[in-house]
Image (cartoon, rainbow, N blue to C red; front, side):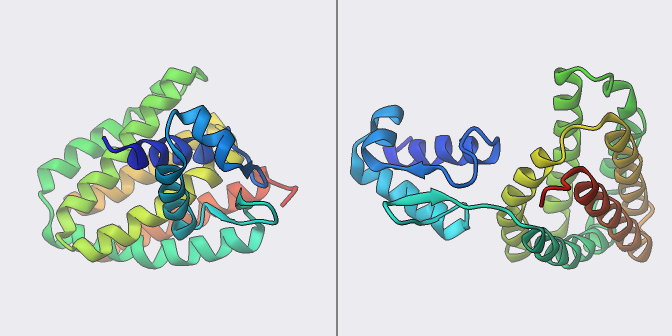
Length: 212
């Protein structure tokens, strides 16, 4: 892996996981030493992060961007447009058996959510597999790229809302409904189930993040 790619991946993960919170100044010398790279690949990494909206030029360098309530509303507007369309396309083009298996796993997912970090991690992995299955099914590289660019911001927002097991259990049922509609080859139901899931997710995030 190239030095710039390694630096980008490390910084991106630190930002998404809130180890580098909004407003953090990413000084070139300090970050280059921390990541074990020279300043040139670090600048390349910072340029990519800025293009993604995770960092922005600040007074003395590059800083980690913040997230406001307006940002969340805009992200969910875009998410609703992209993901509902993707679910409908997956219902038209995907393999029903793949999504039926995912539905079965998602229906059992609440058993993972016992409050342990490993169980929550496993659930997020399962939700990620549903995303990957939809990406593969829709056979539209432009739509997939748009959704992947959006997801990095959504993970940051999810971390703000904390890992509430009641909400995650409800989300698992909502994901199961999406997978089931796709397995049934019902585009309209898949779209509606996706919109309902996003509406409930947004409401939870706003409730769980009152300081925004």
